[in-house]
Amino acid sequence: MRKTVIVDTPGVKLRVEGERLVFFSSGRREEIPLDQIECLVVCEGASVTTDLLSRAAARGIAVTVTSLRGEPRALVLPATYGGTAKTRREQLRAYDDLRGVELAKAFARAAIESRATMLSRLARNREGSIKLRLMDTAARVRGSLRELSGISGRLDDVRSRIMGVEGRAAEEYFRALSLVVPAEYGFRGVRTRRPPRDPLNAAVSFANSMVYSEAFRASVMAGLDPFSGYLHADRSGRTSVSLDLAEEFIVYASHRSVMPLFTKRVLDPEGDFTRRGEGVYLRGRGRRLVVERVLEAMESRVEYRGESWRLRDVILGQARAIAAFVRGDSQAYEPWRWRG
Image (cartoon, rainbow, N blue to C red; front, side, top):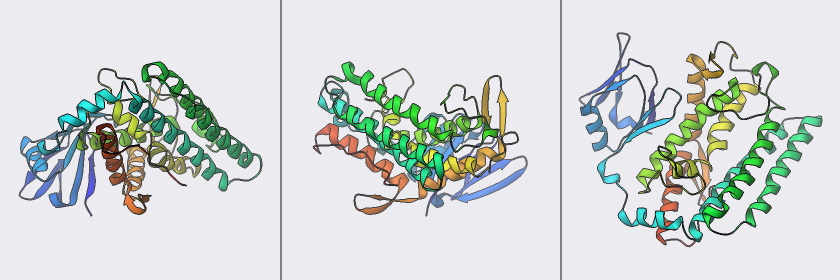
């Protein structure tokens, strides 16, 4: 099975020799056969040769460049993955008709359902008042779907309402997570970004970025314009439709992967994190542990279309389903659901 290779150490040099990817770091040499690589993720500070990029493209290997926080910066794909003109034309047109509203609601629905599922799973292994509070919050989060289903109209007019429903469900969800995160991590039940203010938020932000990168890659491979979205408003530099697609997978691939590192006290709140100003960020062993858990989730088998698929392939399948829906090749778009 081919795998994802992540190079997140500044100063590493990558090149190809024959049929192998070669790493040079601190005088040490490592090699990986090209035919074992599906995706190559290179963080800022590493260097690659143009020969490597060309060989990767010829073999269908996607090369993603990210920040040290895991945020996607660039994507190099074979030219044959270029999107069709019809897909991108219809993607833009869908924004102004019912397709755009239906897609935005589908992404929000998936995000809400997955959070309720996560809380229900956490409740299974708890007792007493914590179990009851988790179950109660899961029910309230799931109940917000009723409000979401009643929203209709032009996307520009109703997006704020859709985002409001999804946002309130997210606030309840993160408050409930504080019930199971040990006090030493300093998590107060609030999602903080730019910068993350505590170790849990730091780990979630980094893991989310890995999911965003995978959704970005899938969007481009499916022929979509990654910058034109529905639930997430268009903004310069924002890969909006990739963020939309990622809503279906964030909880399963990111939160589900990260939470045991905290509930089981695997991560050291001091040694595995660094503090810069008001922000808290993963480092060293902590970053490696999160990367390993998210990659495991990407390779895990889940139910999809009545069969067992790798999650990574499901993300691509859903990107193609978005493209089919906006082109009119399918009559509805169904988000992927984590059944728990």
